[in-house]
Length: 159
Image 1 (cartoon, one colour):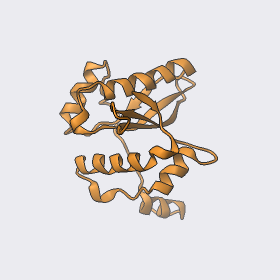
Image 2: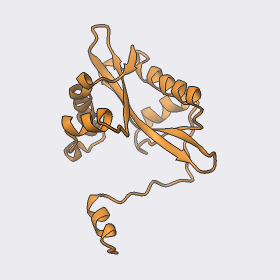
Image 3: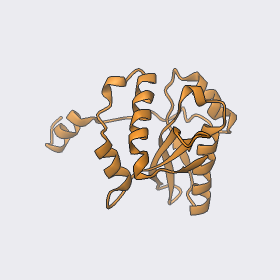
Image 4: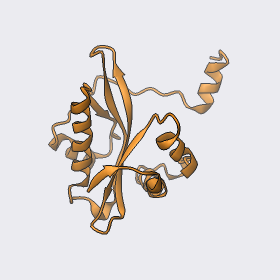
């Protein structure tokens, strides 16, 4: 079953975020806390949203965390999927496909123009899964990032 996340799901989502980071060889980089996730997802002005996949016993076995993007070319919002993760022992049961279908449904219902996400170049299993769903890589684009230290320097007019 796929459903919108609730405040009660925050501890499970954080646990899954940590599992995902470990899988992506970056376990030590998670600084998110229950409080920061709770605020981002359920604070006075939430800027991120989440759906969870539950197993037959109701336990959270996966999550999709997303936010709105905007395309100036389309003149419309889209959904950017920040993370999609299903516990390894729950994969193959349709949870990932169902979460993506749920987000696609939201995009269609609201008139959004895109559903986008990034995939690590070494994660060929995920790439194969996404190709089966009709997604295509956007090879002509490269993700750029300014991290926390760089943000502070740039804000001060540095570099």
